[in-house]
Structures are given as C-alpha cells and as structure tokens.
Length: 357
Ligand code: NAD
Ligand code: IPM
Ligand code: MN
Image (cartoon, rainbow, N blue to C red; front, side):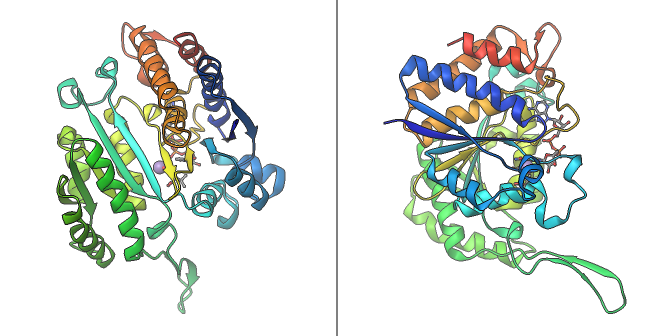
C-alpha cells in the first residue's frame, strides 16, 4: 500500500528547500521501493494569497488524512502587516494544534565535517548530539486570554497567558523520558520555576514521573542558565525538555552549535505517531529566491519522517549517510561555507545528496 505524503512548501525559501527534499525522497523511493505518493497543499502566505487565510479547514483535513506532512517554512514581509488573526504563522500554529502535534523533537547533531563552521571552538562542539524536546501545542503560544486592549487611560496593553495543565506536562515529559532511555539516559528539564508558577508545576510533574524511569537521570535547570550552558559546554546535555516558547528559543541557539540553522531538522508528533516534519528555521526572506538556502535541514527532516512516521528506518539512514557523504566531498551552501570547501547552490546541494545515494 502506498504512503501518502502531504507537501506544504509555504513561503520564502520554503519552496526552494522542499523541492530538494522531495527529490531526495523520490530517489529513496526508487532505491528502497517505499511506494510514496505525494500531494501538495498551501499554507502560510501562499494560502493567504489564494484563499485569504493561512490554512483552510479543508487543507488541514487533507493533511490529517495523509500518512505524514513535510513542510518548508511560512511567513515574510509581504504578510507582516496583516491582521494578527490571519498572519502566515497562524497557519503553522493551526496545523500543529489541529493535528495534536504536541511533541516537537529537535535534534542538534554536529556533523564532524562541519566543526569549523560552528561559531564555537571545534573542541566545544565536536561530537555534539543533543535532542531538544519542545512542547508544541500549549504554553504561552496558546494560552487564553490573549490580545491587545485599551486601558481606561487610553494606553494600550498587550497580554498573553502562560498556562500548562498537568496532563500536557505529563505527556511531553513521558516523550522526553522515553527518548532519554533510548539515548544517553540523561534528561534536563528547563524551566523558570524561580519566578513562574506554571513552571513550578512543570517541575513537580517531572519529579513525580522520575521514579518510573529509574534508568534516566533527571536534572532541572533555569532557562537563562540553560541558554548560557548551551554555548558554554553544550556536550553536558543529552535530552532537554521544555515548554513551547523556551524550546523555540533554545533550539535556535542549539542550531548554531551544528554550524547553521540550516542544519536543524524537526519532527512534530501526536499520540499515534503521526507527524509533521519541517526544518527549525524560517522562510529566510533575506535570501529567498536567490537559490542559496541550505536544504539539508529539510532533507534531514524528510529522513526523520521516514523513520518516525513511516517505519522506513533503512531509507532514513541512507539519506543521512548521503548527507554525510556530500559533506565529505566538501560541498557547502553559503551558511556553512568555510575556506577550502566548495560553495554550492540549494539545487546543487540537493542534486549532490541525490547523487550520493
Ligand atoms: P529565519 O529562520 O527565517 O532566518 C534567520 C536567519 O537565518 C536569516 O539570516 C536567514 O537567511 C538564515 N537562514 C534561515 N534558514 C536558512 C537556510 N536554510 N539556509 C541558510 N540560511 C538560513 O528567521 P526570521 O528571519 O526571524 O524569520 C523570517 C520569517 O520566517 C518570519 O516571517 C518568521 O515568522 C518565519 N518563521 C517561520 C518558521 C517556520 O515556518 N517554521 C520558523 C521561524 C520563523
Ligand atoms: C518555529 C517557528 C514558529 C514557532 C513560528 C513561525 C510560529 O519559530 O517553528 O520554530 O515559534 O514555533
Ligand atoms: Mn523558531
């Protein structure tokens, strides 16, 4: 039976990088007989232009009926001045929330070939392999009430609400504990329990669950310290688990340890293993249309899709091996370019991964 993959290219560099990831999936399909079937949809600014909203209910339903979703990125200056309710980013939040994709896995792995591309010293990052587990459908991103109101004195006030229910904390904590069991056995929970009540509860739930995972060493860290430790000595971490907003910020910081934000893939999954796969970076309006974006985060997200949602681990490993081979060949997009390597375009990088199969 074929596996149906919904492709949502989105905006900016989205279509450029997704094109390369689809080419790689097609060659994996040929080599391994995966029987993949592709269907394409609209999200973000592309959907606003076509339908006046960043994700239609019909498209959300289509995506949910597929076996997995591969997404590029959304957003851009063209839509930045629109009403908050219909901005491109709302489409992304709608698909995450609508499909219940609460578990966001963001692996920050340094390919040894890129040690020089990191902004940190090679000895600080060499061998780096961290997994950030970010809660994706709750927290301050979705808490109510939210908005901008006018106070009695005429001044405006913006507000959001940072909320987590025990059940929401428990399910993401279990994802993280289980991931730690399969990896190095260390879990660091990141919170702001010295200030925010919601994260006092977060910490309590993690502590309550810890005895169920005796093979995992649980620690807690405040988010400000965690940001510092990530750039001071990132290899102290194995799995990190945190809420929606802290995870957003820490994963961009972790990306730089791997050489570039263009190297960080992600999986966003629900309880039944259905997933949406996308690079951690955005639509990069500053380089969109120039053919210079790094497609590897998207290609590696496609590999995660094969592994986590489609049970095609062998093909996933082959994609990762092909990426490594291309880096061995010295091919680099501009973001990971270092002296002595060969600078290539988005399309050349994608073609090289296809050829390395
Ligand atoms: P961004 O991640 O798009 O770009 C930040 C910087 O990283 C830019 O200099 C960009 O050129 C560079 N960069 C990003 N991806 C790259 C790649 N693959 N190769 C080479 N360089 C890359 O973040 P931003 O500039 O803050 O946001 C731009 C737009 O993207 C905004 O509208 C934002 O809301 C949106 N965004 C979307 C997503 C998503 O769809 N998942 C994620 C983050 C930001
Ligand atoms: C990400 C992005 C999104 C987020 C935005 C575009 C809604 O930054 O996927 O990291 O904050 O989750
Ligand atoms: Mn982000």
